[in-house]
Length: 118
Image 1 (cartoon, one colour):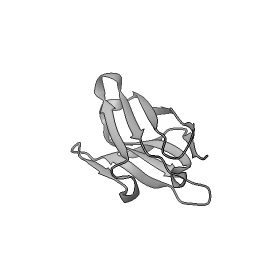
Image 2: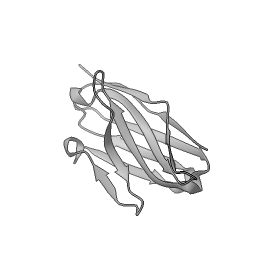
Image 3: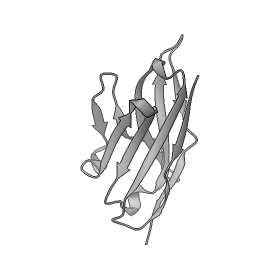
Image 4: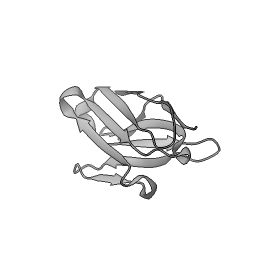
């Protein structure tokens, strides 16, 4: 099993910044991909940024140049630095991990609320 715990959400004004953290524990050596998803009210959950199995990163078009995904392997923690936040970034943000197993499975964190409002 892999446990994921997000932190760092909150209320911020448009143009502001937040940094989300995702701490992983458990069978972390079996993780082959990780990412950040978000879900706004009435909308489907969508990928915001992620690490592929080869370590390359990918971003949703609307956050390119504003959001940066990173990780600290020594701390088993993944981050999402969010700059120049917009009201449309308001959502619950979830940490995700794809885990090797028999069969492979997906782990999710509990989510952290990000609200961008003046």
